[in-house]
Image (cartoon, rainbow, N blue to C red; front, side, top):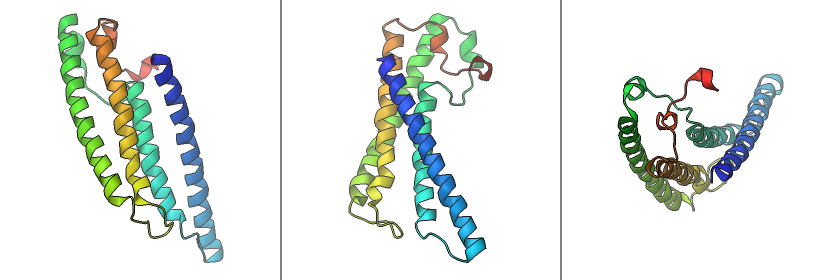
Length: 169
């Protein structure tokens, strides 16, 4: 399962890089067209905004898998192994609840907006809100996998501190 999650995150990193490259071309091209030729690409702003949202949510999935989100671990690091385990389980159950709220809200927004069209591109607004669904499912799988590893005893004591120092990368 860890290998599948790692491959999935590698795929996401490629998609993130493509989103960033397209954003750079769209925004830079639009700036050149505006200031150099007094024109522009109408869809550039809307598409680059959508790509930024997708890039952010997909990047959050990768960061979750790599335990790269910000956190304070000074108390947890001082606890014995069973204390770390309890804190880990409680925090992951809370994160799963928050993930469920985000997933269900994103799903509703996607369904509500699937037939609405964006003004400049004409694309379905369901695409814009759909990234929340992708994030919710992906984050849920990662959280459940990490939680399973801790509950089943497969995780080391270091794995139960879900924050990684920047020097460890």
